Length: 394
Image (cartoon, rainbow, N blue to C red):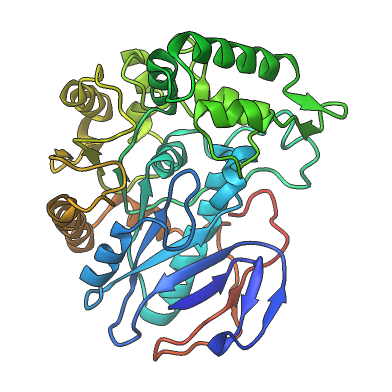
């Protein structure tokens, strides 16, 4: 495994002998150093995920061991419990920095290679937001109000995979409708409505410069971990109470969204110019987060129609697959998942993508990398990007 700082939260040196604090991001590369690996799969987990928390990623890493692909796992500011005060806009800014770093680092070692981004659960929302929203994204009126630089322009990627792209809103609705072991449906509706009202009344504080944090006594009853503070803003984004008419930033995959709304997400995959090939979607057939009223087959059909020629025909609902494919009976679903991902990466590797044409014109997105060390036998490596991020750079 190699560790990269982009620029960094932590600077890890060989053998983990010392750790120096520094600002920025960390990405972990899974590689044995024995095979040339010009291509990169950037993996983004879901709410609460961090390094090594998605079990099936081990299967993918093992399958890719002797291929030209390595896996990068960035630790975003929203990883672990950070999602409660995070937002998709900041996520895709950080993913853009990781993509740019990986592309330039790999190109320096091996020449031109391919980059694919893959999201699990809410990581799929990051993938869709990365590919479909304006580039650069619009500034957030509060969170970006005092930012010294504009949101970065995102570099294109050669491919994208979404695994378990589910609706947080529909999952919450299911909990409210059926109740929990502690609270019946009536009590859950009361808790939900009171939490929504509180979040709407005071989304920010301190002259609209800081997020307001909701009481843990409310968010835990709805199903969120007691260890994760959740802001009013993020809760409203996940619950999206005005949907389907006015979906919030996180409400990308609900089954009741209109065709016009899906055109603003799936329908933008071609026109934004950020996806070099096609989008592979792997939906779980027994996803614990998907309510029973959702017609999965019909939903994927609508997504495919909205995406048009950017939809990969190998997209599927994996039979009996749970949300994270982590249960004891998930050997066969995990085999299918790995098989589909491997086949997709092989196709991306073999065929030219639109991304290569875009990337060949090196414009103002280029940045320098200053590697501290490079151990080709598989040791740790830490490379730095400039701490400042000019508005026209990624």
